[in-house]
Structures are given as structure tokens and as C-alpha cells.
Figure 1 (spheres, one colour):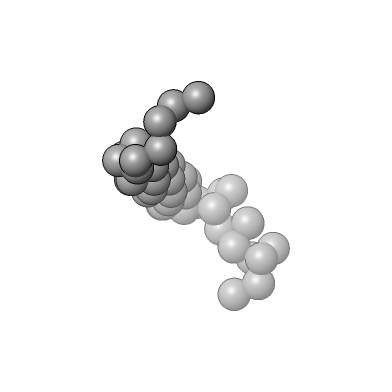
Figure 2: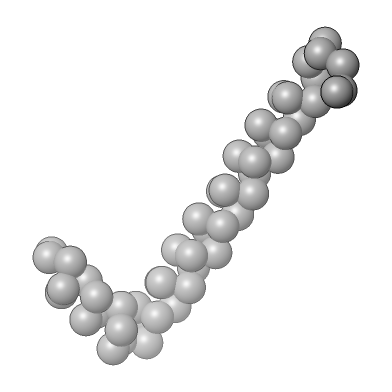
Length: 50
């Protein structure tokens, strides 16, 4: 499937719109979890705050 075909599918199909919304939500959730893990890992270091 080419990028233009994928874009047409997501832009014009109701199922595609729902899939795109779920994909964006999933990516945002995953990014939030990764940032939280990095923040927690960095806060557990022995370096004092400046």
C-alpha cells in the first residue's frame, strides 16, 4: 500500500477515520508513558539539583 493510497483510505473512509484516531491516541499514550519513565529514572539519580 503506497502512502497516497493510505492517505486516501484514512481521509475518506469512516473506518479509516476511526483507525486514525485510535492510532494518534495510542501514539500519544505511548509517548506519555515513555516520558514518565524517563522522568522517573532521572529523578532517582544521586546528583543534587543545581
